[in-house]
Image (cartoon, rainbow, N blue to C red; front, side, top):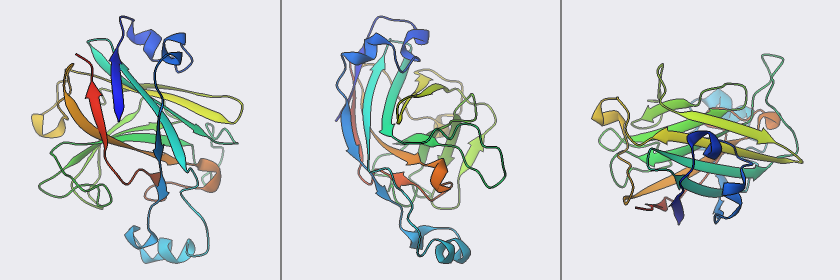
Length: 217
């Protein structure tokens, strides 16, 4: 279970993955697994990666908090290389994401369904603002130009520490928003892409089970 503790501190403080306020919060381990090759969008990718490994990150450690205005997820994982500055078209950045169902029981592996969409908050090491994404099944991902998200990442000593945040109240159509507020319960899961392994798109490690999310009142 991921519990978002209520803390009386500023957005700027909670956006800092190394802020001391995070040190007292429980880190929930979430096991990840590689996405199945049969779920990749093209036969070319399936064939190219048939004898290669992807989804190398086996686990993330997650803490969550809110200050009455915004909710913050702090995601930590082991990664021996800092891939935050790709220098070539063949290079890829490290990434992580939070996924939440917009409607209950959306399937994770399928990235939702037409009637059960999902919302992703995607942080990339080479981009300042995390992407706000929705999907209604494989191949339907939409990334919105205006993102209500903020994020910050720090790589140090073979470990990424990333915070992704969203205000509780955002001005987007209701069909695009996961309703979150103090005192609510919801679900979430997580994903990581290792840039050094050229992971991108559907080539990732992800949590195959929804984690209960409790937001302290």
